[in-house]
Amino acid sequence: MNTATPKTKNHYNKMEWAGAFGDVGTLIPFVAAHITILKVDPLGLLLMFGVALLASGIYYRTPLPIQPMKAIGAAAVAGGISPAALFGSGLTTGLFWLLAGLTGAIRPIARLATRPVVRGIMLGLGLSFMVDGVHRMTSAPLLAGVALVVTYHLLTNPKVPAMFMLLIIGVVSAVIMDPNLLSELAKIHVGFKLPAFSLSSMTWNDLVTGTLLFTLPQIPLTLGNAVIAIVAENNELFPDRKVTERRIAVSQGIMNLVAPIFGGVPMCHGAGGMAGHVRFGAKTGGALVILGSLLVLIALFFSDSVVIFFKIFPNAILGVILFFAGSELAIVVRDIGDKKSDFYVMLIVAAFAMWNMGAAFLVGVILDNSLRRGWLKI
Image (cartoon, rainbow, N blue to C red; front, side):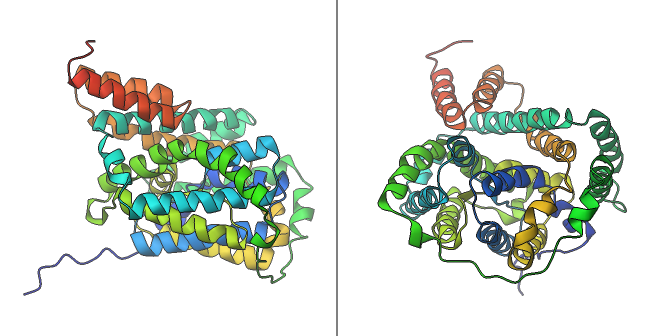
């Protein structure tokens, strides 16, 4: 008699469709910045995001997200570097995480992440999302207020997913605030294109610049957010589909080695993305397959019209999405218990995490060990 537990299959129902858009609050601003400021070709950028989402959804069968690496993206936009240097940082980022996973070097580091440290990172990241969301909502307070009320009323409604109403409110409000948007939307046209080989223009200087300025500063953030936190979040939400730090490291290594070849930017499995997908209904990898398929379609057939597409998502609506994704991530800390030292470590780590994820991890490990060994008293 076969007693093996059947594998959870991906679903593609309306809740998975709604959950598919739960991470656009992070995705769109970063993608838009890469396209408009750094002049990254939207075809390769969106295509690689789409392919990575498809692979993640099919392989992991949970809403294990694909997000742009935030430290690299923010530093690149601020510094105004060339796309070639950005692709260079993707290659060395991919090589680092692939080796960290294959050699097992990630395991002893991950073991240092005790529950208070992990919960602190998740709380800090969640609060950062919420604060960013509130800032975005101030761009149109009335619109944000209506969207918040509607979302709260529909969050647990199985018949009318909250995300669908948010998208409708976003489109209608975008047209009302900018009547010329309708004429711009009419300019959207179909034009099939394939991505170009993006490494031909890269020089050794681009590779060195990308590594020193972007790859190295990103590593601590990725360790805290896209390895330790995402593993804890996934395994708590989906205990039947657990992942390991090693698998996540290898996964991030592969996708970042492949993406730059076709014009993709550095990507990771950010914990905030899973919170967003889950908050709006996703329970399987189907949500990622849906979003990935849409991005591949847009990349191959509508890459010349991407900037127009982004205009139907008002900043205030993106803020609401970020706010709820952050609250979903932050609320997991409720299981921290009533031990004073654990709660204290969590709060300290959360505070540092809102500034720098790598520093938060380091401070948390030192503080937690010092308290456990009796070197410090609180």
